[in-house]
Image (cartoon, rainbow, N blue to C red; front, side, top):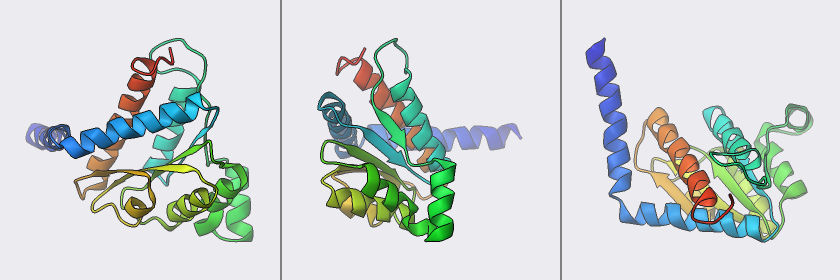
Length: 191
């Protein structure tokens, strides 16, 4: 069992080192942090959506921004598209694939940014949200993996984790979310 644990930790470490050494991806992380900061400074709202573990990451991002990351500070406007009543209503009456798109149509505007999270980059409901947000002039940050999928082409900034295992991709997504929060509170003065 110790060997299995060590092997899993080694996989995670190797991927983080790979991302750390990828200058283009590190630059995209910085660019996306700047986009989030500009949104917050400009009176916009940061929206987020995802499925499963990525839904939890969307909620995690929003709670870190609204409440606090490490420092006591005013809240940063952030909301996720995961209200159970609205999500299940739209999914039941119309379709699950369009539910996040409905949120984007309703809330997103040209001052806002949508963080769309999909490990494959091809989740249909995430793509619907990105397209609807794009139509409303909303900036899109895509957190994805594998080859980036279609989300890569819809995002203003696409952060594509170079891995195929969902769990490894998700580990890097939460790391990037924490990097954003750290940068917002330190480098961008939201503290």
